[in-house]
Length: 258
Ligand SMILES: *[C@@H]1O[C@H](CO)[C@@H](O)[C@H](O)[C@H]1NC(C)=O
Ligand SMILES: *[C@@H]1O[C@H](CO)[C@@H](O)[C@H](O)[C@H]1NC(C)=O
Ligand SMILES: *[C@@H]1O[C@H](CO)[C@@H](O)[C@H](O)[C@H]1NC(C)=O
Ligand SMILES: *[C@@H]1O[C@H](CO)[C@@H](O)[C@H](O)[C@H]1NC(C)=O
Ligand SMILES: *[C@@H]1O[C@H](CO)[C@@H](O)[C@H](O)[C@H]1NC(C)=O
Image 1 (cartoon, rainbow, N blue to C red):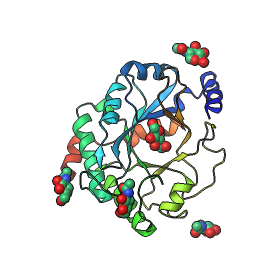
Image 2: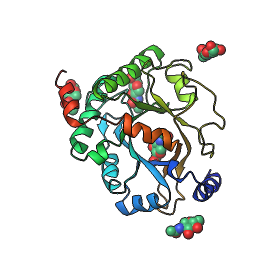
Image 3: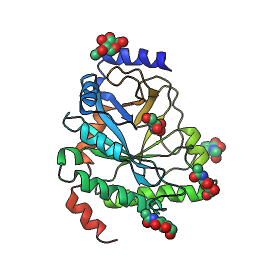
Image 4: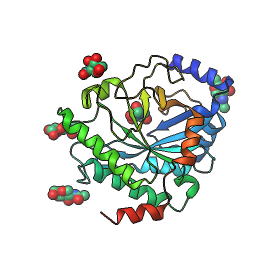
C-alpha cells in the first residue's frame, strides 16, 4: 500500500490536479502540519466530528480550526452514525443529524469563511455495529439524510462507503431518495473517479474517491495515518457557491420548530 501510495503522491505533485486532493485523519494535526499539507496540494480537509460512540469528536473540530487560515476550498465534516450503545442517548438518525448541525453552527457560525465551506459527509461502514435488519438500517440512513436536508437550506450531503459496506448494511441496490453524493472508498491507489468503479446504491458515478488510507509516509505528518481522496475541484467549487451550508440564523430558526 505504501509503495503504491508513494507513486500516486509523486505523480500528484507533478500533475495539474493538485487542488483535487482531500485529506482526512482522526489524529490531531497542528496548524503547521496543515500548512505543510496545503503547500503540497491539499484542496479540502476532512474531519470526523461525530463518532460511533454517540459523541462529538473534539479532535476533528479542532482540526477544522487548525486548518482554517489556509484558504482551503472547503471542510468535510464526517459523521460516523451511532447505531448501538450511544453515550448521548441519541439513537435516531434525525436526532444525531440535528445535534451535529447545531454544534457546527455554534462553533463556526461566527466564522463564515469556515461555515460556508462545510459539507456534511456520513460514513456508512461495516465496522460499526449496524443491525442485521437492512430495512431498519435503510430507515436510519433516510432519516438522517432527510433531517440534514431539512436543516441545511441547501440540500447536499455525501455518503462515504463502498460496495461491501453498503451491500451488507442496506443492500446493494438500495438508493437514498434524497440523492446524496458518494465518496467511494476503494484503496486502489488511482486518483480518479473511474478506475474499477461499478455502480451500486443508485449512484451512476462517485463524487469523490478515497483512493488510499492509513498512509503514514507523508513527510508533513510522518507516522500519522491519513486518508487520501480525489475529487473534482470544479464540481466542489460549484457546491461551495451554490450549496453551502446556510447561515446560522436560518438554521436556528428551523431548529426552533422541533
Ligand atoms: C480514515 O482513516 C482513519 C484513521 O485516521 C479511520 O479511522 C477512518 O475510518 C478512515 N476513513 C475512512 C472513510 O475509511
Ligand atoms: C442516558 O440514559 C441513561 C439511562 O436512562 C442515563 O443513566 C444517562 O444519564 C443518559 N445519558 C445522557 C448523556 O443523557
Ligand atoms: C452490538 O450490538 C449488539 C446488539 O444490540 C450488542 O449486544 C453488542 O454489545 C454491540 N456491540 C458493540 C461493540 O457495541
Ligand atoms: C440489483 O439490481 C440489479 C439490476 O436490476 C440486479 O441484477 C441484481 O440482482 C440486484 N442485486 C441485488 C443484491 O438485489
Ligand atoms: C518529502 O519527501 C519527498 C520524497 O521522499 C522529498 O522529495 C521531499 O524533499 C520531502 N520534503 C520535505 C519537506 O522533507
